[in-house]
Image (cartoon, rainbow, N blue to C red; front, side, top):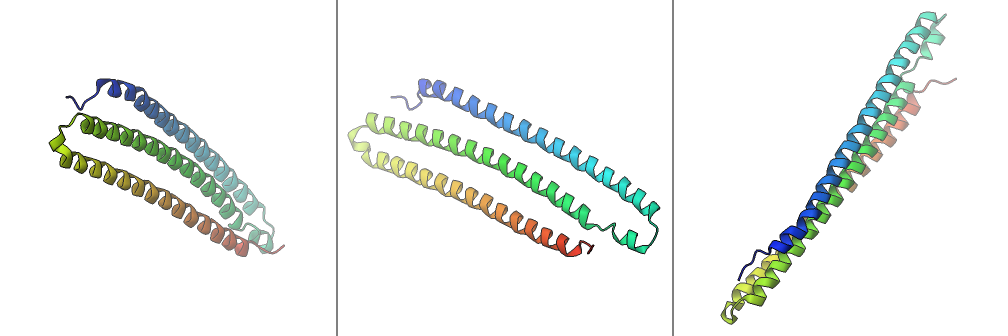
Length: 179
């Protein structure tokens, strides 16, 4: 009797390789998008800095200087933060989906091994088989709770970021000068 099934192992390799490929693509795609976003923010910030500097040098009175409010910069930085948050949330979703798929594949393989042991076990090994089945059910429960906690954590982080963004937008609106 052999618990290790080489066919199951070989059949699982392409799934693992596909998951690794998708994970790598997700990391590279997210990194490229983040770099582009950072370059856009840098370009926008430097343009704004020099434009404000030119306006400050050409200001004719105190009213013109007041118009160079930091609210415009705050709004642009909030937009950058929003885009960065969306990018991170998308990357987290990819990682969570891949983790879910790998956990499901591992669970199926574990149940297959337990079924193989149960099928080939002698009649007096029933208590051992019951313990193995209970352990497999415990692993299922643990995986499920872990995935649920990860999903709740992502939802909580998204909610906190959304509330922060709304508070920042409200603060920027209060700082914006009257025209």
